[in-house]
Image 1 (tube, rainbow, N blue to C red):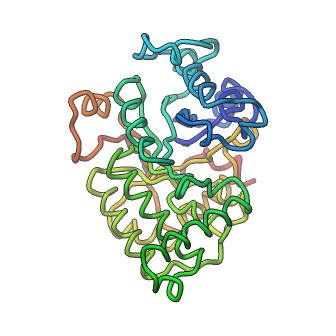
Image 2 (tube, rainbow, N blue to C red):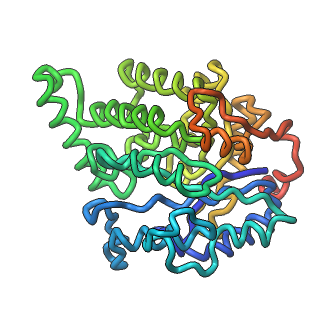
Length: 337
């Protein structure tokens, strides 16, 4: 079995435990493939989360910590990417290679005008196995930290909508404006990065689980799915949504059903934030994919994906490996007892 989205307390301020403990837990649970995908560094102090500020992590510290996560870095001349090299991801990748296939990647951000460029440059310059393409901010405000920040993002989205269209106030609530602008930001990310894995597709629902998907949101969702299909991206079925009290995993059921009709490929992710989260809610995840009829899951075929990246090849289907008959694997037994 697999999960392609994870974090550890060494390199993520709102996570816990060591990277090694996350890997050891994945091995103990019998994962066949596990993705290590710490957040990309931030480039400005104002982009830091409150918990990073509390820990006195400046934006340069996020660069140093991501460097520590990697054991092999091509930016050898950049001091930000040469420090804190103990216990790094590729060291663990080699050490555990006979027990589990570890993929070493990065979860992206889309915060301001240069964030996507920064992510693209890191992908090209660093020896990364894959990207998890995610959006956590809308109009530079985090939407996944807490209710207060989410409300601020809603207010800003509404303000911008009304500024551009005086009639928006009558047709678009602050929540609806945020949903639309989230999917617009996601579209920009998908086009710019063509990430191997698309992270928590409908994260915008995190604090508004009862907000219905409007016709305008669906237009954006379908447009974004078209982009994913065009380059062969993999959409994660992310079980962390249940920790946040949502009815479904990310993406929600109606979106997954549409994606299935479009031939989208899927992977599974626990989006773990420490060893205790590895395999989190996988019993519910089993029932979810069984309900949806998902029997095959995918993960990047690293060597060929890198070859395409090195040759600057885009707009072609990303090569993948598959795990078939996934719901019949004995892996699930431990979660279904």
